[in-house]
Image (cartoon, rainbow, N blue to C red; front, side, top):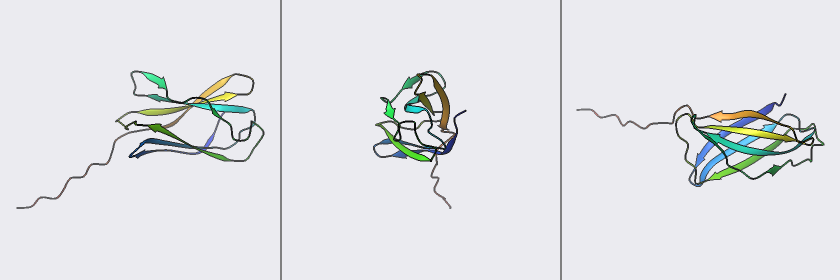
Length: 108
């Protein structure tokens, strides 16, 4: 199966930065990024071509920005991996479990 060496989601002022690193890109043509909130899912990206045309066993890192998106509780980003033979596999990049909350200390 497909293995990711690393993966992350980062909220930025411009949207959600989706980052992943492939362990092996042999026979991989490209990627689609999907977003799911547990109720519905939608494809968020156009086809992101493999940087090595399915010919490399070395780790390759990808960054993709979901422009204007805001991470909400339980949002999941899923990577659809398109192989050179037209088949595909999906793997979860990351799930937003909760955000940071600032609570100031108030004393009386």
